[in-house]
Structures are given as C-alpha cells and as structure tokens.
Image (cartoon, rainbow, N blue to C red):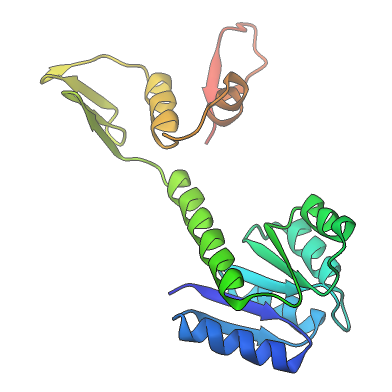
Amino acid sequence: MSRILVIEDDPAILRGLADSLRFESYEVQTAGDGESGYALLQTSQPDLVILDLMLPKMSGYDVFLKARANGITIPILMLTARGEEMDRVAGLDLGADDYVTKPFSLAELLARVRALLRRSQAVADANEPIERLVFDGVEIDFGKYEARREGATVELSRKEFQVIRYLASRPDYVITREELIEKVWVWRNTRRPERWTTTS
C-alpha cells in the first residue's frame, strides 16, 4: 500500500483529499502547515507528497527546496490556487514532479497521483540490481561472474559483467558513454593510464 502525505492548510480540502485517497486504498498522513509537514516528510517516509504552496509557518516552496536539498527525492505534486502560467513554470523548474491548480478535478488529481506512483516504482525497479540474465541460449550469473552460451562457458572480465548488468537493468533507456563511465568506471590516476577500477 502506497503512503501519501498531504500538506494543506485548508481543513475542508485536506479532509476531502485524505478521505478520497483512503477510499482509493492509500495510506494517508496529513499536516496543516509547512513545519509539521516537513517533519512528517522526514520521519514517515511517504511514497508521494501532495504539497500546497501557500502554507503557514513554512511555505510549500521552502518545504520543497529543503526536502530536495536534504536528498529527499520522492515525487512531489504541488497544489495551489495560483494558476498563472509563470507560477506553474516556476514550480516545475524547481523540480516538482507535477502541478495542479485549485479548483481541481478530483478524478484528474487521483489520475496524476497514480501516474506519479507508477513512474516512481518504475525508476525504483530499474535501480534494483539484476542477479541473473537469460536470453537466446545465454545465461549470465552476475553474483558468480559466470556466463554460458548453449552450455559452453563464455569468458568475460568483471568489467564486462558490470557493463552488461548496468545495461540490462535499464532496458528502456538510452545509455550514453558518459553515463557508463560515471556509473561503472572511476578513473584512477596511476602510471598506467589504461587501468580503471570499479566503484564500490
């Protein structure tokens, strides 16, 4: 069950959102101001935050910036009565995952919540290390560093295993050379510049 934190100072909207989300089988926590909302964000580890921007004690913008500055990367959907284009652009440019203006359609907001949770889960799944890969008669065991094709052993270096594992864990993404170097290799400044070492 996904956990959603709603930070909203309007009691009627807060209650309505909480009831609707619980009806959709989400676990819901609520806060009526920015300070208590940020405290809950730190301790409750929600899967998604619905964040009003016009909050007492600490604005929604400040809650968002403080969360991102402290490494909190969960999806945040900004919710506000400010509907001007520049306000929406500013929120998205800050790094918000989505932006909904009041008054809003509850059905649309719930659809956006579902989409954000699906996207977040897809990213989490992509970051899970693959232990075994099987395709077209090829079997690769990344834990044992063993590879076979049609039962015959295939000799691969550890670096080749790591490259294959990284690529296989992201089947729907274009991986650049720079990303491979950053994620799989770290340059070691030695007398032999051809040597590379894996990250730990």
